[in-house]
Length: 316
Image (cartoon, rainbow, N blue to C red; front, side, top):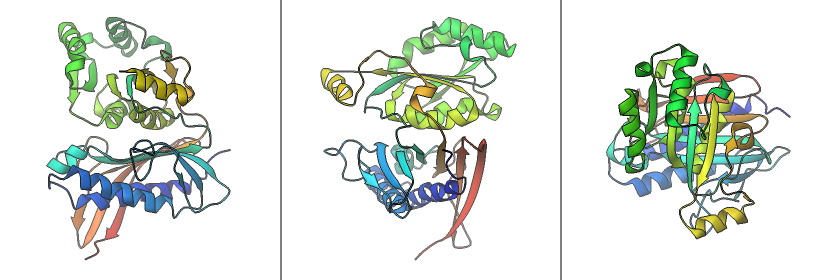
């Protein structure tokens, strides 16, 4: 059953208010309180909605997070039963240090339709919708993926751009891309927004790849699903504790490669509000005693992808 398009406005308000709540910590080198402010606000806003929601991607498990923990029930009640995935503040360091790219993010889907990802790493692949789905795969070599993308787009390999997190674990990938003369867009944090770089030609990114957060993979997939791009993910478990946790969550095959339709099913809404300026959306502006926010909104069943600008009076 499709989610009502009017719900997009209410969900967009959830992230815009969370963004505003942590804005007062911008450049204050206090990422802990910035994250707490965003989390408190997001929880309060969700609880105003007439929904029965359950957090499937959150701030951690019950023993790790006082609010927005996995399994927490949210909402004021009603007929709508929803899975909720949240990242109240993606880029805590960006807010603390007043750097570009901080977002407040949420995705919702009907109950049972949003993958409950463990708090572990995920090897990811996201590719532009201009590339045939069967041209790339997590199981292909890097060289094969890049060559197939170049052939599909009728580009030279030197004109292909790959986005990935700038991490020591990706050094071999970066070395190979350098050897192939592929352009790189290296990001310091924020792999939700990194994966979304493939969704619009204006970002000039053809492929997002590498290992990042598993929960962030689910959040990105919910937006990518609306935009017709490809996404695959495979969890990376560092120790037996992570493996045991995954098994308790119902994951039987720890080496399984997940396709987009296994991560997000049915209708969905995704919202990401900018806190500081970034590629996806502009950051918060203060003008005429108002906060002005930009939110990327997607709604699958209506094929909606839009930037929503909102104004809120600054309370003194």
